Image (tube, rainbow, N blue to C red; front, side, top):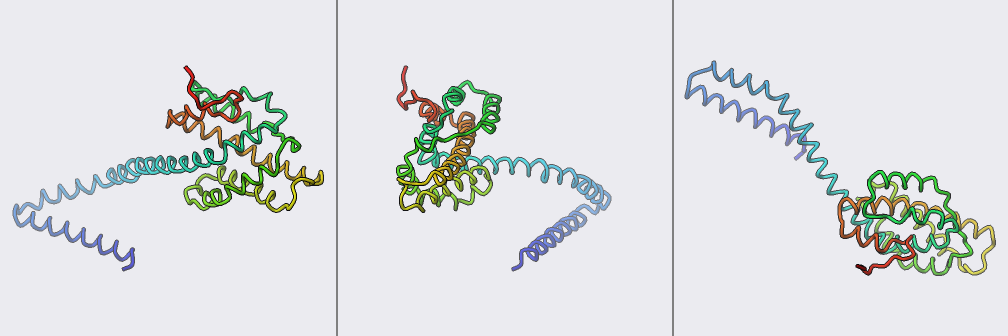
Length: 247
């Protein structure tokens, strides 16, 4: 049955049911005066009821649904950083000649406020990312990304990521870098022009990785303190990072 037709039948049924109930009310009490009083009173309340249902209740339900979707989305993002992202950050940052100038700013602490996260995010969006391609083991990077090819392809197919354009952009950048590396039969003796091209691909993925990692750290701080604790202890920018908890 057509959905719109079903709604029409349902609506007519409700109106008929209401009419029958009012009719029985008249048969029992023989008081049309009070029937009209209640009827007008009920109709007068309809706009308020619409307000409560469509604006307030609907917003509450939408916020709850959005919160659930956000949790699921960040679970996917967390798996990505656990399997691929954090290792890539450590790998790329080791080839960043300017990292020492900003490394301390990337050591996330438990006392960071939203303002701290916003400040460093703004700074990193304007940071001049650099990669010394000579310090990048392209063979290792190719093999690492190829090993996780199916995993990343599965993430791109995840419908929940459609709502997160920036993270989807990150996945595409990493996936493109992998395709570039896999497409070359020999990575040992590449011309300078090709190395420059690969350096740009790495910088594209690197810059997106940093921003998404910081956003994920902020999410963990607000929602999962135990995961945030581990993420701080294994910070890829911290040369002294260790999962071991010291007193």
